[in-house]
Image (cartoon, rainbow over the protein chains, first blue to last red):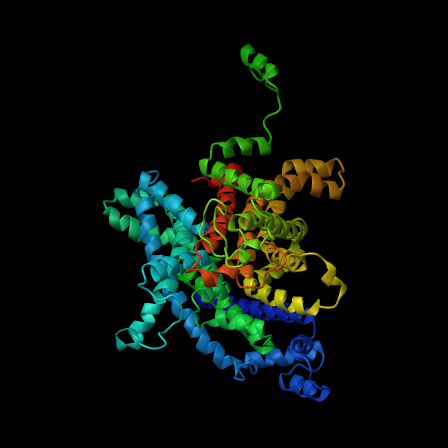
Length: 322
Length: 315
């Protein structure tokens, strides 16, 4: 029962967060200028009649508060309006492009998690050894390498110099690899996923190692060892579970960073996802698409935070009391 | 009352030794000096600062010198004239990389200055006042923590660039860069506010603060002269981390082509040369390496500062 109440409370809080962000975003964009005027700035030569009908069509007429509530009511029904440049419902586009983005980000964070657990177990169980220092140094270097620069390096090495992996796009335009859409798609995913894995692994390893080192010093680990458990079970069964708790918060943050910087990742790899779509939207001043994208990314961020909060309860029973 | 028994030698020694123990900062420096990673970070940061200050004297060419284009020497591989080669616009890569340092530092320091002011004011008020004020301000900070900052900055920079056309704002030099700096500052304050709140909350009940209240010190002096200086070490770690983050963010904004066309920045170099990656990789690798060194420097520095000022966290 405690768990259900906890989750319910987090859900309500998440809804409030989304509401708050929607107010801040809307206020900010509208503080810069009236959207219809911004729209027209780079599309000169329209008559007043056209302007009026366009602003009515895209729901850009009326006072700011009116527009906010109309917009809020619409997004609650997952209706983000019609894209100006693509003339398609924004919600459909968000789903199509969003899936492409998640297709590289979710595998990346899962692979990074497994890899960083293995590396940090190796390092933490041999604290202050050469391997340990090597891991710390490597993770620190990797953590400071800008993600998109890793991507550029990967393209340079694997696409241009070695010529073994595709440098752009999600699919081949002409001949699919082995005539299979699936294999061709996976083939194109290697570099973007590789870049995100590299970036996430470095950060996660830094955190996981220091957390693990601290847990391994605690009394219950000594007790577990003293009771005759094999070291493997002590580390993977007892220590890792406890070391994982601080890392969990960071998983949500990392996902947010990945999602937030998707425009950069997807520009480097010309990946047809939310980020690339967003760049297009702000270049062409597609107001409904800009608002829709920022909101959907906020939804996903809040969703990820909510998931980590719920996962907390599953891993750490102490949270229930709070 | 018992008179404490003090051996004469000890009593004498305590008179001979100056009674003032090393201060917070000096202690921190003692610990920082022993941290190799931190010192390396300090060295890298010093190098970047030095380059930023000296670039007009050490750079082999003028930053806007495109004359290589006329000689048909654009996209030329590194040689003795152009140590890091030239890019597709005929710029000398080394010169642009050196000049980029000052832009990067301006962004990092500027953004974190804005963020620190907002963060310390909001966090300080929340921590010191407590109660409902605290609750409201911290909830407000939480909204800012879930906003997809980078995405929003891109949109605001682009839209703002349209609105200013034809207004007095246009006459501000490097307006675009200023916008990015202020925006980064306006979004990066929540972590600082949280830390400031925690520190103000802790120090509010410290004995020396209570003593200051007892002797009737003015509230302003308590906040600015007693609490704030003691909260600074923890805040400085976040600022150092934030500088690296802000530099990275500006680089990404510029890489996507929304940067300041008038500023010489590493991100812009990447933006203009990324398409020619296959032909002239040196024009991309050098600014990329410069970003890496700078961000690494600030990350290591922040790491060393954490160890120096929060020794309990030391692992």
